[in-house]
Length: 401
Figure 1: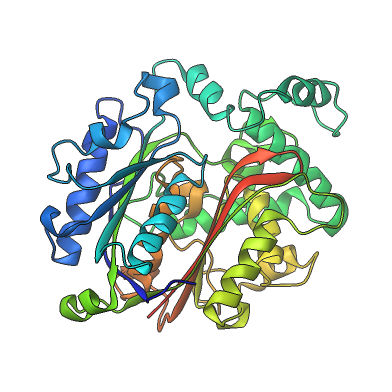
Figure 2: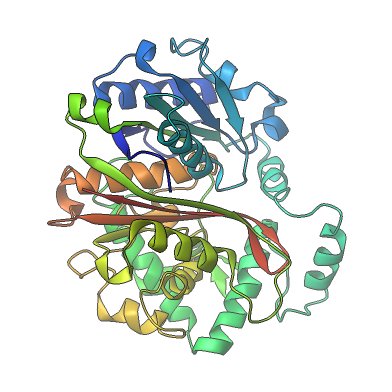
């Protein structure tokens, strides 16, 4: 995978939520300070920085130098700084690049910082910004197909991506026998986990009926089955094995896979299937070795689909795996102990790093009431954008103790 081993030396994130009076800069500064303090390093120790943000340019007109602006007062300016935009996989892509920088020998220490502010006085601007993560040359055709109900639904939600998730959910229901109640149970589990996470956007437990009765978004999705709009930042410091030994860092990056989507033909592997196969090969591990997983549940049904793509169960086995309790706290492989995108929140340019902060904390035994006892191997799956029948970007990262 890399020429030399890479370790996570520090990890930190802000609380996720709706913070109308804050800025991307303030969020990024908080996460950056926290990650450096966790690593026991200062800005002068960092050799490269990769800054992730997805939609600030659309919402605030801050383009081109987003990282330099957001991190201007952190002491990090002067080193190579790369701005990373890769839809909802922006932050995990930044982490991938930071690992490449260290793993190739370019630097001893690199940082990945993801920050996003989605709250806006005009919520339609936010939905429109998120909706740019599709091929704009073909978006008109896609909208017409959805509006005509060719996918079996109304296509009438305010969020174009929830229409896309809804269409995929209906197809999954037909293929697996999953029900809306199964999707509701995913949300119930996520909120139960988030109630134990002080950084989560929503910390109240919900019932299956409350999820089913929440406002319809796009059939079969209801409001509580969809990830919320919010703000936040997360950052990680990665380093070489030599530096890790000096710092006492023990969290190793076992695999980091990044793939792009493609115009997939029926039966061909999806982006997440290709990424996870690469990650398992790099790590020399398989799904049976995983202690804890953070996956991309922008809509509740995506979690069940991801179970199958990650090899946690056989095709069509997602609902049964959820019902067994395996993926809840106390099960053999808890999923989204942070609360996931559904309840922890989904400030899209920060999400990938936030997943890895959660997994680093799990491997270090510092998750309090949501701690997975004896966690040894952790996997994060983070996708972004839509390209026909595939995600546009997909990362799978494996960490170990």
